[in-house]
Amino acid sequence: MASDEPKAKKLKLSEKDEEKKESPTKKSPAKKSPAKLSPNTLFGMGNPLLDISAVVDKDFLDKYTLKPNDQILAEDKHKELFEELVKKFKVEYHAGGATQNSIKIAQWMIQEPHKVGTFFGCIGKDKFGEILKQKSEEAHIEAHYYEQDEEPTGTCAACITGDNRSLVANLAAANCYKKDKHLDLEENWKLVEKAKVYYIAGFFLTVSLESILKVAKHASENNKLFCLNLSAPFICQFFKENLMKVMPYVDVLFGNETEAAAFAKEQDFKTKDIKEIAKKAQALPKENKKRERIVVLTQGKDETVIFSDKVETFPVLKIDSKDIVDTTGAGDAFVGGFLSELVQEKPLAQCVKAAHYAANVIIRRAGCTFPEKPDFN
Image (cartoon, rainbow, N blue to C red; front, side):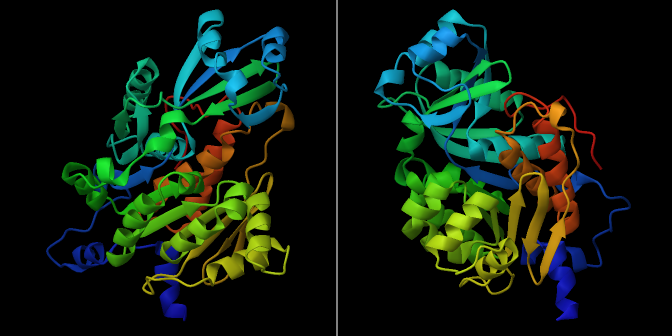
């Protein structure tokens, strides 16, 4: 088993890469640089949302019966909220949604070349859709949106009062992604084939299972890396069937402690111990036997637990509570940091180091935003 360990730790992307590396005609790189990365190496698919954030007043919260610190899905009574927010307050726009955030963070960590990250999702043919396209371009990711006019672009309003953020998400168009109308198109599928690492947040299991399965099977059959996030307890509970249809293709499974607990309960693991949960999740049936599944479970300020061939724990970066501005995007940032090293075939410990760094940067700022350049090596 010991001889297999470097493989598990080094995370080769595909057999073709292995052959290229061993070819004597290929010069070995003199330094560790991300130069070998080419556009479209990392692929993400999910629910694109335009994040609209603004500092509001208590009257605005009261009008829409919002708690100062909360996350909810928009109901009928919130229909006018988004337009009013834009008209009344000074707003900031950012390309959002869990998967898109992670791809955006990975691209930020990588810096060059641009467009290493590709993203697919569904938007509306409207003003917010145009802003979302512009914002994804500014983040240097290659976003190919399926545009339809039945539903408006999905939005997430962040209503800020003091240190509090009340989030109201309206999925709208994000719910309308269609495999046959977008993923199956030849020019789009070519982008999927170019990728070596795939990431999809569990939220997309509520939208298009068939799209996820097509991508997951492609990754498995070509010995590439497919990564999935549990995303939320309700995914583990109410979309368990969809989740378990995808699980055999999952090479890297992400989740936090509450999602892990919900998953363990639904899978009847009969344990609440996070290390045991990681071990049992790792041992679930898997299609591609050429690589062991890696389970990555975060616990907020507590250590991150990873199970590949054995259990390992990694402490997070310490941060003073007074420096924490907003933890909403921490999970997305963690994954983005992890993916940024994974696509470069870095060891597992380096992937986690980058994940912890990215999360530490993001929680010091409002929303899933970041400075111009990372300070990480």
